[in-house]
Length: 510
Ligand SMILES: [Zn+2]
Image (cartoon, rainbow, N blue to C red; front, side):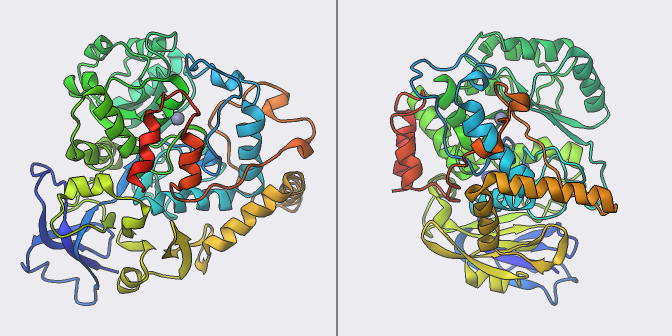
């Protein structure tokens, strides 16, 4: 179904990134943008007679946000700290051996991915939508393909099978030279490679991951390095055909007390994106994370503007994906993906400053491939959203359009998702035993195998495989709200290694 959205368009179009105007975005039946017009200029001649029409007035119409660094499997978890620890962690191999890591992080995440994988993914994707996100990285490894459901999972997206599922490769763990060399050849053949690289304090041992990637030929234009906060600024000089880094300042400050040298990367023409990272040390969505980026920029005197920060969650990640995806994301322009977010803003507001200031309450509509997935009741109705169901976000009523993962004709509500997660939380052992029985039964009867997900982060200290011998020991913390709320800000103050800098985040939400 085609869709026309009118409003104050902030297209971030190539060659005119700062231009904003009152106009319309025309999304065709194929879910791609056919045209973007100014004022009342005519649209395409055909294909829009029966189009749904959404009028956003003077609210902002932007490309849907892209979160290029997250870990969906851990989305339900609260912020984590190791009790009694007084010094920041040295690097990404330090915190998994903390005494509380496995029980606080691995065990509850395992309970959800094993006992309720569909509900876990639904929770993580709804949380992304609530922050205006239309594409997200960090989809857990799985036993069967799952693209084309709700939010685009960047590693899984194949656009209905038109590109191979190996076009976006990712790794959270340190890879050996032979694998890095393979990734280097895959990038030469058109893939992108998103790699957790050099995550830790400056000049700690993990900086060697970047040097190893360099030696293996990975410093290419389609290399996406997550973190790189352990690098010395001069290290970027070796990346002569610059690619992309993903900056997660909240997580960096929380764990290591410092963060990526963004001006050094920008000076080398490296594209900088912002990612939210994971529940235990991250924000809830990239709309929150750019506020952290603004706090860091201000405290360091980096002078990043709201325009710079908005690009880090729209056209920058969109350009990083455009090669492997073979379609432009993160920009509203002809032939690009019809992924759109509408944010409320005053008529006179500077558009980029308004995006930086926006919170979950300002997200009025989220459209993916021309289909309305989440928003206020009125625009959801105008966009003819399928299977609308209510939910409450940050104290406001919203509408979600979601179906079951395996059945596009079966509606699914967020209340049902939460009920499923709560059942796992109430009795993890019972839920895990039931899942094991269901898997065994599927094997015996030859039925289709259950969806299985894997954890993509370190499991922590043994017992076996990071799990307790007795599953009855698993305690699952409360499932976190979808938006940044007072309890989140209370859990930030006085914890982690940010020295108070992250306390400033609450002011954006006051
Ligand atoms: Zn990560």
